[in-house]
Amino acid sequence: MSYIVKNSTQGAIVARLTDAGRKKLSEGKLNVNEVSIKLGYSTASHFIAAFKRRFGITPRQYIVNNSY
Image 1: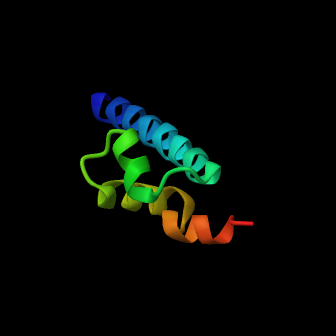
Image 2: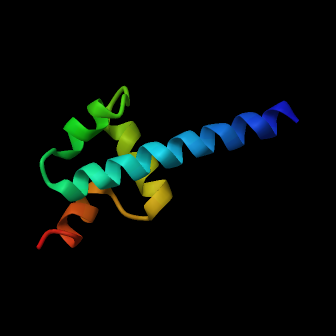
């Protein structure tokens, strides 16, 4: 049971962080590395991997697809 609670809690945290990262990237003021640091990731690659798992594309692809 504790395994399920831990995983669901961890998943919720990652979801919130990646949602916040997507919002910051949409604003266009910060690059991927800066966003990952602001969100508390130890490396940009950890943020990139979490973002890709959640949204199916990398943060860079998200920026390119959403730049107007």
